[in-house]
Image 1 (tube, rainbow, N blue to C red):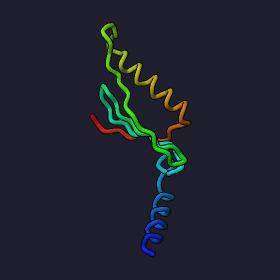
Image 2 (cartoon, one colour; image 1 turned 30 degrees about the vertical axis):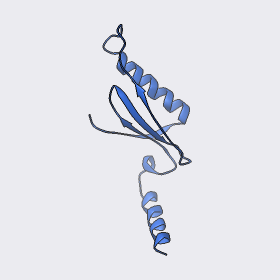
Image 3 (cartoon, helix red, strand yellow; image 1 turned 45 degrees about the vertical axis):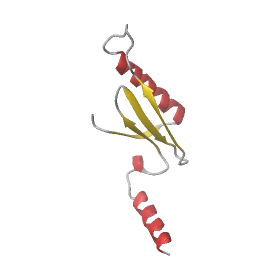
Image 4 (cartoon, rainbow, N blue to C red; image 1 turned 180 degrees about the horizontal axis):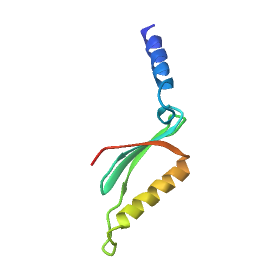
Length: 91
């Protein structure tokens, strides 16, 4: 009985959230760094996670790490559908 009440309360709380935070949206969580950890929650509830390295090579200029990150983020958004919210740890 208590479990059903808790579930109902959680559903009510989720419905009060702004649209970007609802469970039917794609959410991305990032742990930023040279090797960035990430977790993606799809609208169907499937969670995918991993790491990606943005370590510069010997011949890279100063802005290549940023370009690699933005290209990776754009590709992730394209493949997983529109990302509604990105959560990250402040570095």
